[in-house]
Image (cartoon, rainbow over all chains, first blue to last red; front, side):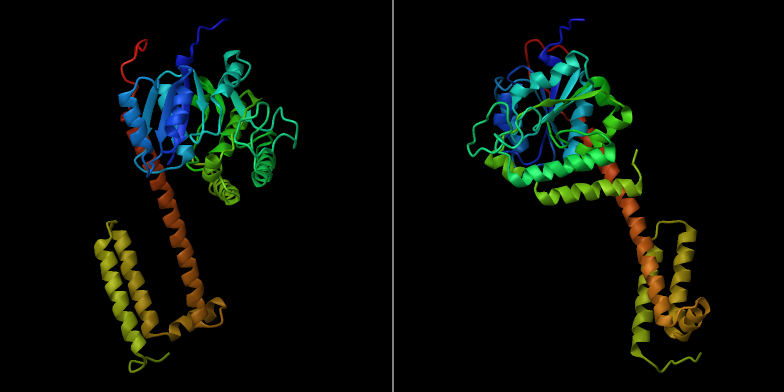
Length: 258
Length: 121
């Protein structure tokens, strides 16, 4: 059926930890198309919360912002889970996860939620490696986004991400082209079923394993990533991959905490 | 097995420490009687080991371990592992509770969008 779903029931969930310098720019961009934006400040020690709170009070220009705060820092996975629970309670039809550091492009969201609107999939995963000529236009030294390719992907990160894909494939038997992309969309029904228990970074793998466990219909959609100096600085380092593996091994050995 | 009372000052030091810690834990323990009894037994056994070190050698030989020191070392290692396990279980439990509380608080105190035109909820 044709659905009169407006952007007002699309909830963009943005976990933010110490993103003070960029958070307002990201918010301005994301709220533009009339989406509901849920910021979950994960106990930042900088002025992330204050900046959002003030701008929310002062100007109507910044749109539909819901501001939540963890009193202590729990990790990105926990912040996502909080945002998802909140958005579902608010009546979200579609939930989108979006990183706060400005690496995603808002213009990718319509393509991301399209498969859910058409009921082709319940979960849509953004992929930075899909729809690019492998290896070519990927490395670019300018800060400008290039359409159809992931922008400025550092060599080391590329290798790291490929390892993540391999690991996910081996453990979950789901072969994705990009296992750790922060841009995803869920139908409300799928979001209700998915349990995120990994408070820290391993939630990305956990989401994949939930898709496999719940046999959700999923699809990958090409999205862009802006590797700016800021996101590079904030982003994960190679050592984080090891931490994520250890977190997952902990789960294997201690049993799932459901 | 011989009592060597005139022996080493370390025995005096250890006994005093064991007693102080024992009393501290027994008084602080919020657990039921059983926990305290176990603690008191533990203090007694430790004191005997300190006063009569040869007993540990005797037990060691009984178990097929060479020296009393080795027996104590193995026991200690096992004890530490057990304690670590206990602590990590408790920590995980607490982490989960903290997550739940923090999440509930965040959702309860959410700042919703201000006065807006077409919002009706």
